[in-house]
Figure (cartoon, rainbow, N blue to C red):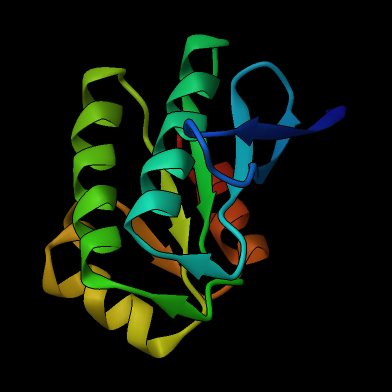
Amino acid sequence: MSATHYSAALTPAGRIPTRFSVRRLGERLAVVSAGEWLDEEHARAFARCVLRTTQEGIRELVIDLSEVRHHAWPAIYALCELEARLSEACCEPVAAAASALLTHDLRAVGLDQTWELAPTVDEALGEMLARPC
């Protein structure tokens, strides 16, 4: 399986560019990394980046939140909206959330019901690849 890596830059009008790492692992699987800071603005830009990968043919996602060190509740709600949009796009994402607080907050809004929460990207990828076809 070959990997393709690129950064997606999304710049809201008058704002500093926000970059997210996108690693494609084959034609259908990608890892999209959010970075360290996840406020509402960054979460919405991250969601647009993730949704763009679905327009490029990705159907299995690892949403990498493992480096997030600071987040706000509006960002969690933006992730809930992302989950709904991904369901419409027929994706089965896996979220990797390393921090106990972020994992707790994702569970508090029920994202653990539709996303597999794992502490690392490697574990999330393992869970994704272990699923039956």
